[in-house]
Image 1 (tube, rainbow, N blue to C red):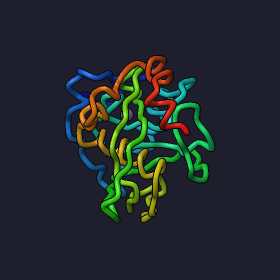
Image 2 (cartoon, rainbow, N blue to C red):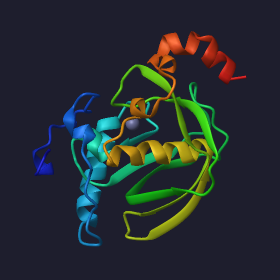
Image 3 (tube, helix red, strand yellow):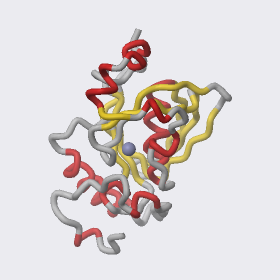
Length: 190
Ligand SMILES: [Zn+2]
């Protein structure tokens, strides 16, 4: 773990599956005192995903074990089924979620820390989540489907969980090219 974020390599290196930092539980930021720290972490996360096709990133993925994530909901995506209105990239500090129904769904996910691969992951379909933004404002929102999935994926990183650990049918994890040609994937896109 980096104790001093000023010592981090630039651009920050994306940690990959197997790095023990990815299995740690991250600590909350102290608010409002650590809002400037959140700002610094955001800059580093932005640098890490510059020129990369990323829907979201969590601070532990660059070795900063703090509860901060950022994500967007794109209007459309070649690999994901998206039925939500687009949401621009934004930052969530100390986010939490809870399911608001027992409904779950199975869809494809990928992760910057598991490059080149995809897998089919069960997630809650409808959630309520809350977070603080960079101005210190608290938000409570409801999300469904893809939007809810991204929140659950990114929050899992803060608790040391990567999506492959949630896969139930292990035949649904593989390299992107192979998966995207598989009958399972093509069927799921219909
Ligand atoms: Zn991820």
